[in-house]
Length: 222
Length: 222
DNA sequence: CGTCTAATTTATTTGGGTCTAAAAATTTGT
DNA sequence: ACAAATTTTTAGACCCAAATAAATTAGACG
Image (cartoon, rainbow over all chains, first blue to last red; front, top):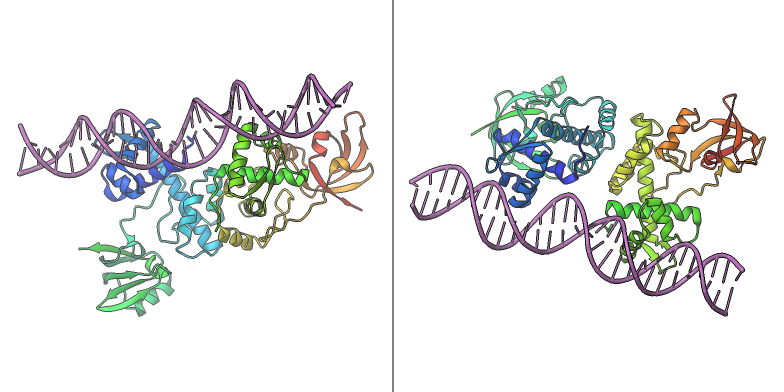
């Protein structure tokens, strides 16, 4: 039923998936090479392999896109990755910045049963500790038009368009902090240590914890 | 600090460790080949690699034994394996016979921190779901003076505390036979002809072949 | 048309692991 | 103690996955 894929093949699928959510159009060889820190020629090779396995659609010089089954596979790896991140963060109390590397390993242990049991154990979480949405078991993934503030790069200016966590506690905090819908803010610095962020709001510099930034939806502005 | 080992190298270490707990003396090339279902010549090759990395002591034709650091590494893999088994069994509710295969994968994800956090999360378990002892973080492992059922005298009552052969085939057999950890059984008769045993389990009389009885660890009760 | 850039092909390399066949060392049987 | 049997080691080759450099080709565009 499910083809055995190597570690590397799975990483290519993931990369193509991630690039194609950003770019919409077919993904170029160079983009992939860039993302995976390898050479374009290597990418072409791998693409051919994946095309043979019907995981990507490939026409020479036209870039690649995932087929239905390729996408399915990619999404399920992402699902795995994010579920493990939740596990590591919530149950094992790893810190925010440690979970990614470990999940990179764990995501490749492929067993549908394991994934579903883990999902149930974690109480069907919808987002990982970085604020990224977890695909459901049918492969549906929340279309994030709205990025969490946590995912934004330094230097970008954006406006608040929503919240993920609508608890009164959180809303009260926002109120006190003078952050509201439509507030404009600019990302000045990201602290690797705890992933807190230094932002400028209303010409004031403020530090926001990851807890905050992953629950604030924003839209980039130019 | 810790050398990167391949999946295969780690499996050789595990195999050597497991064989040397049974045999006490140095482990022979053939035994390893047998256990790993490969050829003796391949084993010699790998042994040399491991010897270069100072993980085993190796003198030609004399068999191998683990060095201090080799043993340490092997034990930590076993520790990992068994902790994951506990996790899968207790938290994710996998059945007894499913956990082994998955743990075979998980054990190779090597991170001291992960192991220790997992250990703490599981509340420092001392035995895995098959009844095998979990080494502590310093690499000490409980010396099991578990007897195999095969060695027990007629008339004695005992409880199942583990298995020697943890193949899924064997575990499945036990499952079908309604024999599980903690099952109480009494030895009614030993058949000299084929060394099979007549035992009483759950008030039912059953005959168990020697193949079975020598792979079932039990503890005597009064 | 000529030029530039991105993509592809080809031929090699590297790393990891295994295997066969033959030689060498060890063990066993008498 | 010595020939026979067995185990272990060598040497050489093989296979696979993946990456690479260098040369070639396709497509875009003034």
